[in-house]
Length: 383
Image 1 (cartoon, rainbow, N blue to C red):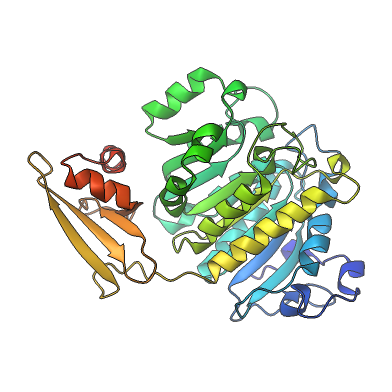
Image 2: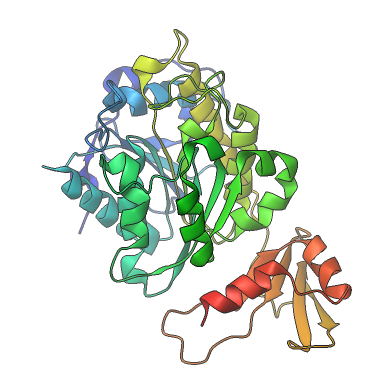
Protein backbone atom coordinates (compact mmCIF):
# COMPACT_ATOMS: atom_id res chain seq x y z
CA UNK A 1 0.00 0.00 0.00
CA UNK A 2 1.14 3.54 -0.79
CA UNK A 3 -0.58 6.57 0.69
CA UNK A 4 -0.16 9.24 -1.99
CA UNK A 5 -3.54 8.27 -3.46
CA UNK A 6 -5.17 9.31 -0.16
CA UNK A 7 -4.09 12.93 -0.56
CA UNK A 8 -4.69 16.10 -2.53
CA UNK A 9 -1.75 18.51 -2.96
CA UNK A 10 -1.30 21.64 -0.89
CA UNK A 11 -3.01 24.53 -2.66
CA UNK A 12 -0.63 25.94 -5.24
CA UNK A 13 -0.74 29.56 -4.09
CA UNK A 14 0.70 28.47 -0.73
CA UNK A 15 3.85 26.86 -2.11
CA UNK A 16 4.33 29.51 -4.80
CA UNK A 17 4.61 32.25 -2.18
CA UNK A 18 7.89 33.75 -1.02
CA UNK A 19 8.43 33.17 2.68
CA UNK A 20 10.77 34.89 5.14
CA UNK A 21 14.29 33.55 5.66
CA UNK A 22 14.44 30.47 7.85
CA UNK A 23 10.66 30.09 7.71
CA UNK A 24 8.90 26.89 8.70
CA UNK A 25 7.93 26.32 5.06
CA UNK A 26 11.55 26.40 3.87
CA UNK A 27 12.47 23.56 6.27
CA UNK A 28 9.84 20.97 5.30
CA UNK A 29 8.91 18.73 2.38
CA UNK A 30 5.44 19.28 0.95
CA UNK A 31 3.04 17.79 -1.55
CA UNK A 32 3.06 20.29 -4.39
CA UNK A 33 3.85 19.02 -7.85
CA UNK A 34 5.12 15.74 -6.40
CA UNK A 35 4.29 13.70 -3.32
CA UNK A 36 7.15 14.00 -0.81
CA UNK A 37 9.66 11.23 -0.17
CA UNK A 38 8.95 10.03 3.38
CA UNK A 39 12.25 8.24 3.97
CA UNK A 40 13.69 9.52 7.25
CA UNK A 41 10.66 11.70 8.02
CA UNK A 42 9.68 12.04 11.70
CA UNK A 43 6.43 14.01 11.46
CA UNK A 44 3.67 14.17 8.84
CA UNK A 45 1.14 17.01 8.58
CA UNK A 46 -2.28 15.73 7.49
CA UNK A 47 -4.85 18.35 6.54
CA UNK A 48 -8.52 17.46 7.05
CA UNK A 49 -11.48 19.02 5.23
CA UNK A 50 -14.29 16.74 6.40
CA UNK A 51 -17.27 18.62 7.87
CA UNK A 52 -20.17 16.14 7.63
CA UNK A 53 -19.84 15.29 11.32
CA UNK A 54 -21.35 18.63 12.31
CA UNK A 55 -24.25 20.76 11.14
CA UNK A 56 -22.24 23.81 12.12
CA UNK A 57 -18.94 24.77 10.52
CA UNK A 58 -19.89 26.57 7.33
CA UNK A 59 -16.36 26.75 5.94
CA UNK A 60 -14.59 23.98 7.83
CA UNK A 61 -13.23 22.56 4.58
CA UNK A 62 -11.08 25.72 4.22
CA UNK A 63 -9.60 25.31 7.68
CA UNK A 64 -6.48 23.31 6.82
CA UNK A 65 -5.45 25.82 4.14
CA UNK A 66 -5.88 28.81 6.46
CA UNK A 67 -3.87 27.06 9.18
CA UNK A 68 -1.09 26.23 6.71
CA UNK A 69 -0.89 29.85 5.61
CA UNK A 70 -0.13 30.88 9.21
CA UNK A 71 2.13 27.91 9.95
CA UNK A 72 4.33 28.33 6.88
CA UNK A 73 5.20 31.90 7.91
CA UNK A 74 6.43 30.92 11.37
CA UNK A 75 10.15 30.70 12.01
CA UNK A 76 11.85 27.33 12.20
CA UNK A 77 12.72 26.19 15.72
CA UNK A 78 16.03 24.94 17.10
CA UNK A 79 15.91 21.37 15.79
CA UNK A 80 16.73 19.93 12.38
CA UNK A 81 13.27 19.26 11.02
CA UNK A 82 12.32 16.09 9.18
CA UNK A 83 8.73 17.02 8.46
CA UNK A 84 6.49 16.40 5.46
CA UNK A 85 3.19 18.12 4.69
CA UNK A 86 1.22 15.41 2.92
CA UNK A 87 -1.54 17.77 1.79
CA UNK A 88 -5.24 17.24 2.46
CA UNK A 89 -6.83 13.85 2.97
CA UNK A 90 -9.25 12.83 0.23
CA UNK A 91 -12.84 12.73 1.51
CA UNK A 92 -14.65 9.41 1.56
CA UNK A 93 -18.00 8.81 -0.11
CA UNK A 94 -19.55 9.13 3.33
CA UNK A 95 -18.34 10.07 6.82
CA UNK A 96 -17.51 6.50 7.80
CA UNK A 97 -15.32 6.19 4.69
CA UNK A 98 -13.39 9.28 5.75
CA UNK A 99 -12.80 7.70 9.18
CA UNK A 100 -11.50 4.65 7.34
CA UNK A 101 -9.14 6.77 5.25
CA UNK A 102 -7.72 8.38 8.39
CA UNK A 103 -7.37 4.94 9.97
CA UNK A 104 -5.43 3.53 7.00
CA UNK A 105 -3.16 6.56 6.71
CA UNK A 106 -2.49 6.57 10.45
CA UNK A 107 -1.67 2.86 10.45
CA UNK A 108 0.72 3.28 7.52
CA UNK A 109 2.54 6.25 9.05
CA UNK A 110 2.86 4.93 12.60
CA UNK A 111 4.07 1.55 11.37
CA UNK A 112 7.00 3.48 9.88
CA UNK A 113 7.58 5.50 13.05
CA UNK A 114 6.14 8.66 11.50
CA UNK A 115 3.93 10.68 13.83
CA UNK A 116 0.82 12.13 12.14
CA UNK A 117 -0.34 15.64 13.04
CA UNK A 118 -3.99 15.98 11.97
CA UNK A 119 -5.43 19.47 11.67
CA UNK A 120 -8.72 20.87 10.46
CA UNK A 121 -12.09 19.15 10.11
CA UNK A 122 -14.65 18.37 12.80
CA UNK A 123 -13.83 16.82 16.16
CA UNK A 124 -15.41 13.45 15.35
CA UNK A 125 -12.51 12.70 13.00
CA UNK A 126 -10.64 11.50 16.07
CA UNK A 127 -12.63 8.28 15.58
CA UNK A 128 -10.37 7.55 12.60
CA UNK A 129 -7.35 8.61 14.66
CA UNK A 130 -8.33 6.09 17.36
CA UNK A 131 -9.05 3.28 14.89
CA UNK A 132 -5.53 3.60 13.46
CA UNK A 133 -4.31 1.87 16.66
CA UNK A 134 -6.61 -1.14 16.29
CA UNK A 135 -4.08 -3.48 14.69
CA UNK A 136 -1.27 -2.69 17.12
CA UNK A 137 -2.45 -5.39 19.55
CA UNK A 138 -2.03 -3.24 22.62
CA UNK A 139 -4.26 -1.06 24.73
CA UNK A 140 -3.91 2.69 24.25
CA UNK A 141 -4.62 5.77 26.34
CA UNK A 142 -6.50 8.76 24.96
CA UNK A 143 -6.29 12.37 26.09
CA UNK A 144 -9.14 14.62 24.99
CA UNK A 145 -9.11 18.41 25.46
CA UNK A 146 -12.61 19.79 25.02
CA UNK A 147 -15.14 22.07 26.70
CA UNK A 148 -17.75 19.29 26.42
CA UNK A 149 -17.67 15.50 26.61
CA UNK A 150 -19.28 14.74 23.22
CA UNK A 151 -21.07 11.73 24.69
CA UNK A 152 -24.58 12.61 23.58
CA UNK A 153 -26.82 9.70 22.62
CA UNK A 154 -28.55 11.81 19.99
CA UNK A 155 -27.29 14.43 17.59
CA UNK A 156 -24.54 14.57 15.00
CA UNK A 157 -21.25 12.70 15.16
CA UNK A 158 -19.35 15.70 16.49
CA UNK A 159 -21.55 15.52 19.60
CA UNK A 160 -21.35 11.74 20.13
CA UNK A 161 -17.99 10.55 18.78
CA UNK A 162 -16.42 9.89 22.20
CA UNK A 163 -19.19 7.37 22.85
CA UNK A 164 -18.25 5.65 19.58
CA UNK A 165 -14.64 5.39 20.77
CA UNK A 166 -15.43 4.12 24.28
CA UNK A 167 -17.96 1.54 23.06
CA UNK A 168 -16.00 0.39 20.01
CA UNK A 169 -15.48 -3.36 19.66
CA UNK A 170 -12.94 -4.76 19.86
CA UNK A 171 -12.10 -2.58 22.82
CA UNK A 172 -8.45 -1.50 22.96
CA UNK A 173 -8.90 1.70 25.00
CA UNK A 174 -7.03 1.28 28.29
CA UNK A 175 -7.66 4.74 29.69
CA UNK A 176 -9.39 7.96 28.78
CA UNK A 177 -8.72 11.42 30.21
CA UNK A 178 -10.43 14.72 29.50
CA UNK A 179 -9.02 18.11 30.32
CA UNK A 180 -10.61 21.55 30.56
CA UNK A 181 -14.29 20.64 30.40
CA UNK A 182 -16.75 23.24 31.68
CA UNK A 183 -19.24 22.03 34.26
CA UNK A 184 -22.18 24.09 32.98
CA UNK A 185 -21.85 22.33 29.59
CA UNK A 186 -21.78 18.81 31.02
CA UNK A 187 -24.54 16.49 32.25
CA UNK A 188 -23.59 15.37 35.81
CA UNK A 189 -24.70 11.84 34.90
CA UNK A 190 -21.86 11.66 32.39
CA UNK A 191 -19.38 12.48 35.13
CA UNK A 192 -20.80 9.60 37.18
CA UNK A 193 -20.37 7.20 34.25
CA UNK A 194 -16.76 8.27 33.70
CA UNK A 195 -15.96 7.80 37.38
CA UNK A 196 -17.42 4.29 37.35
CA UNK A 197 -15.08 3.52 34.44
CA UNK A 198 -12.16 5.07 36.37
CA UNK A 199 -11.57 7.55 33.56
CA UNK A 200 -9.82 10.79 34.45
CA UNK A 201 -11.56 14.13 34.03
CA UNK A 202 -10.32 17.56 35.05
CA UNK A 203 -12.53 20.60 34.76
CA UNK A 204 -11.21 23.92 33.50
CA UNK A 205 -10.83 25.50 36.95
CA UNK A 206 -8.76 22.58 38.23
CA UNK A 207 -6.57 22.60 35.13
CA UNK A 208 -5.81 26.25 35.75
CA UNK A 209 -5.27 25.78 39.47
CA UNK A 210 -2.95 22.77 39.13
CA UNK A 211 -1.53 23.24 35.66
CA UNK A 212 1.87 21.62 36.34
CA UNK A 213 0.08 18.56 37.76
CA UNK A 214 -1.48 17.99 34.33
CA UNK A 215 1.88 16.99 32.85
CA UNK A 216 1.83 13.33 34.05
CA UNK A 217 -1.74 12.96 32.75
CA UNK A 218 -0.68 14.32 29.36
CA UNK A 219 2.43 12.10 29.45
CA UNK A 220 0.25 9.02 29.87
CA UNK A 221 -1.47 9.50 26.50
CA UNK A 222 -0.78 7.51 23.35
CA UNK A 223 -2.75 10.05 21.35
CA UNK A 224 -4.19 13.52 21.85
CA UNK A 225 -7.45 14.88 20.46
CA UNK A 226 -7.86 18.67 20.89
CA UNK A 227 -11.10 20.52 20.11
CA UNK A 228 -10.32 24.22 19.90
CA UNK A 229 -13.69 25.02 21.50
CA UNK A 230 -11.74 24.34 24.71
CA UNK A 231 -9.96 27.67 24.08
CA UNK A 232 -11.80 30.84 25.09
CA UNK A 233 -13.42 32.63 22.15
CA UNK A 234 -11.41 35.79 22.82
CA UNK A 235 -8.35 33.82 21.71
CA UNK A 236 -10.06 31.40 19.30
CA UNK A 237 -13.21 32.97 17.82
CA UNK A 238 -13.04 30.59 14.85
CA UNK A 239 -14.09 27.47 16.72
CA UNK A 240 -17.06 25.64 15.23
CA UNK A 241 -18.69 25.97 18.65
CA UNK A 242 -16.95 28.94 20.29
CA UNK A 243 -17.21 29.31 24.07
CA UNK A 244 -16.65 32.57 26.00
CA UNK A 245 -14.74 30.71 28.74
CA UNK A 246 -11.90 28.28 28.34
CA UNK A 247 -8.17 27.82 28.15
CA UNK A 248 -6.03 30.70 27.01
CA UNK A 249 -4.06 30.30 23.78
CA UNK A 250 -0.91 30.22 25.89
CA UNK A 251 -2.26 27.34 28.01
CA UNK A 252 -3.25 25.44 24.86
CA UNK A 253 0.30 25.81 23.55
CA UNK A 254 1.69 24.57 26.87
CA UNK A 255 -0.48 21.44 26.64
CA UNK A 256 0.82 20.85 23.12
CA UNK A 257 4.40 21.28 24.34
CA UNK A 258 3.86 18.71 27.10
CA UNK A 259 2.29 16.37 24.52
CA UNK A 260 5.21 16.83 22.16
CA UNK A 261 7.74 15.89 24.85
CA UNK A 262 5.78 12.70 25.62
CA UNK A 263 7.85 9.85 24.15
CA UNK A 264 4.82 7.58 24.30
CA UNK A 265 2.52 9.81 22.25
CA UNK A 266 2.31 8.79 18.58
CA UNK A 267 -0.42 11.02 17.06
CA UNK A 268 -2.16 14.33 17.66
CA UNK A 269 -5.28 15.90 16.16
CA UNK A 270 -6.39 19.53 16.44
CA UNK A 271 -9.98 19.84 15.31
CA UNK A 272 -12.95 22.15 15.10
CA UNK A 273 -11.76 25.22 13.15
CA UNK A 274 -14.25 27.16 11.00
CA UNK A 275 -12.69 30.13 9.13
CA UNK A 276 -16.14 31.68 8.66
CA UNK A 277 -16.35 32.25 12.42
CA UNK A 278 -12.82 33.67 12.67
CA UNK A 279 -11.87 37.35 12.82
CA UNK A 280 -10.56 39.32 9.86
CA UNK A 281 -6.96 38.34 10.68
CA UNK A 282 -7.74 34.64 11.06
CA UNK A 283 -6.54 34.77 14.63
CA UNK A 284 -7.68 31.22 15.40
CA UNK A 285 -5.68 29.80 12.49
CA UNK A 286 -2.63 31.54 13.95
CA UNK A 287 -3.32 30.07 17.39
CA UNK A 288 -3.60 26.55 15.93
CA UNK A 289 -0.43 27.00 13.89
CA UNK A 290 1.48 28.04 17.01
CA UNK A 291 0.03 25.06 18.93
CA UNK A 292 1.41 22.82 16.17
CA UNK A 293 4.73 24.66 16.32
CA UNK A 294 5.01 24.05 20.08
CA UNK A 295 4.10 20.41 19.67
CA UNK A 296 6.83 20.01 17.07
CA UNK A 297 9.37 21.78 19.29
CA UNK A 298 8.33 19.50 22.16
CA UNK A 299 8.75 16.45 19.93
CA UNK A 300 12.31 17.45 19.07
CA UNK A 301 13.01 17.99 22.78
CA UNK A 302 12.24 14.39 23.77
CA UNK A 303 14.93 13.05 26.09
CA UNK A 304 13.77 9.80 27.69
CA UNK A 305 14.29 6.27 26.39
CA UNK A 306 11.61 4.75 28.69
CA UNK A 307 14.09 1.93 29.29
CA UNK A 308 13.83 2.01 33.06
CA UNK A 309 16.56 -0.54 33.74
CA UNK A 310 19.15 1.65 32.04
CA UNK A 311 21.54 4.02 33.80
CA UNK A 312 19.41 6.94 32.63
CA UNK A 313 17.00 6.31 35.51
CA UNK A 314 17.27 6.32 39.29
CA UNK A 315 15.16 3.66 41.00
CA UNK A 316 13.49 4.46 44.33
CA UNK A 317 11.81 1.88 46.57
CA UNK A 318 9.32 3.06 49.20
CA UNK A 319 8.25 0.58 51.90
CA UNK A 320 4.66 0.65 53.15
CA UNK A 321 3.04 -0.84 56.26
CA UNK A 322 0.15 -2.43 54.34
CA UNK A 323 -0.38 -3.96 50.92
CA UNK A 324 1.24 -3.19 48.65
CA UNK A 325 4.31 -3.59 50.80
CA UNK A 326 6.42 -1.56 48.43
CA UNK A 327 6.07 1.03 45.67
CA UNK A 328 8.76 1.47 43.04
CA UNK A 329 9.46 4.82 41.40
CA UNK A 330 11.80 5.85 38.60
CA UNK A 331 13.26 9.28 38.00
CA UNK A 332 14.85 10.26 34.70
CA UNK A 333 18.30 11.77 35.09
CA UNK A 334 17.92 13.54 31.74
CA UNK A 335 14.47 15.11 32.11
CA UNK A 336 13.71 14.92 35.84
CA UNK A 337 10.36 13.22 35.10
CA UNK A 338 8.92 10.52 37.38
CA UNK A 339 7.21 7.16 36.76
CA UNK A 340 5.49 4.67 39.06
CA UNK A 341 5.78 0.91 38.58
CA UNK A 342 2.61 -1.18 38.37
CA UNK A 343 2.84 -4.95 39.00
CA UNK A 344 2.99 -6.55 35.56
CA UNK A 345 0.50 -9.27 34.65
CA UNK A 346 2.15 -12.22 32.91
CA UNK A 347 0.65 -13.43 29.66
CA UNK A 348 -0.84 -10.05 28.88
CA UNK A 349 -1.49 -10.17 25.15
CA UNK A 350 -2.06 -6.43 24.95
CA UNK A 351 1.44 -5.58 26.14
CA UNK A 352 0.41 -3.16 28.85
CA UNK A 353 3.21 -1.04 30.20
CA UNK A 354 4.35 -1.81 33.72
CA UNK A 355 4.95 1.86 34.55
CA UNK A 356 2.76 4.95 34.51
CA UNK A 357 3.78 8.61 34.54
CA UNK A 358 3.56 10.32 37.91
CA UNK A 359 4.94 13.35 39.71
CA UNK A 360 7.35 14.02 42.53
CA UNK A 361 4.33 14.75 44.74
CA UNK A 362 3.23 11.12 44.25
CA UNK A 363 6.63 10.00 45.52
CA UNK A 364 6.27 12.32 48.53
CA UNK A 365 2.81 10.87 49.21
CA UNK A 366 4.23 7.34 49.21
CA UNK A 367 6.93 8.39 51.66
CA UNK A 368 4.13 9.49 54.01
CA UNK A 369 2.66 5.99 53.76
CA UNK A 370 -0.14 6.94 51.37
CA UNK A 371 -0.88 5.11 48.12
CA UNK A 372 -1.14 7.52 45.15
CA UNK A 373 -4.52 7.52 43.42
CA UNK A 374 -2.77 6.92 40.08
CA UNK A 375 -1.52 3.54 41.34
CA UNK A 376 -4.98 2.52 42.61
CA UNK A 377 -6.75 3.46 39.37
CA UNK A 378 -4.15 1.68 37.24
CA UNK A 379 -4.53 -1.48 39.31
CA UNK A 380 -8.32 -1.43 38.90
CA UNK A 381 -8.02 -0.99 35.11
CA UNK A 382 -5.65 -3.95 34.89
CA UNK A 383 -8.07 -6.32 36.65
